[in-house]
Length: 273
Ligand code: 15L
Image 1 (cartoon, rainbow, N blue to C red):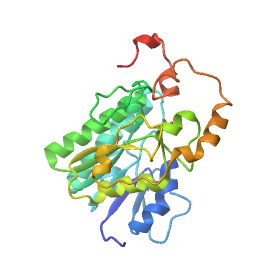
Image 2: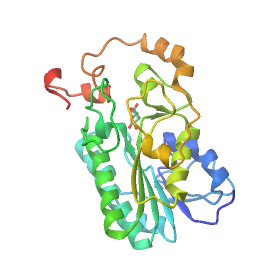
Image 3: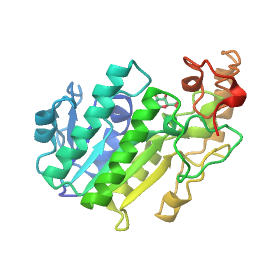
Image 4: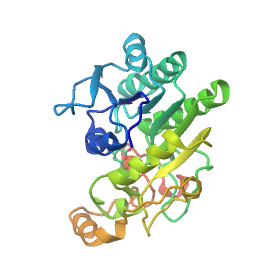
């Protein structure tokens, strides 16, 4: 269905952005894409505004006149502190603040499973648990969720945080059987955030209908989420890929996997809730 709203999509040239742009364009043909580099295959219906998230003026120009923002921009894995600080802390603040000034009504924030990565795999968690980040990257995603709550409560912005698992055509390994989300399903979650009248501040898990899930996504379901992807359909592929890597005594215990194991100097029994 055509939609006259102006929706700005940051991080449009990144991995997830590239996968979901054509799917989003079916629902929102006038999408305004933003990133540091222009996507190679801009559709006739799309426009592009270059913006560096660390530069408030550029971010303000990118979101000018928008009523909604899908914020996928930033650094998408663990990195040195200054990289995370610039792209995901300062960049995320600049985005929310520019959105407030521009009168943006709805923001979809790409959070991550790594905001709660130190929960053990044997525990099923909902969206109200205390954050347990597994990396500086995970901390930055928890920060983004907190900013979203602030702008929702203080300024009435309708903010939806997606704690994304792993987006792709199929789960890459056994861990991803629990956290995988198809491109179609993440677009479905974004559409709920962009359109549902009851959104104030929400956290959804970005996961498909995975039998091995570690997450209770009942709030998303209450608001209409009906995932169509099923990780189990790809189990053989995921197990074959898993067989190529050895066991990880830290990463295999916790939901965040290798993000937990990196730089780990603790005792596994003392980590996580
Ligand atoms: C993420 O948050 C990353 O952006 C992505 O690259 C994957 O590492 C994913 O998490 C994951 O946990 O598989």
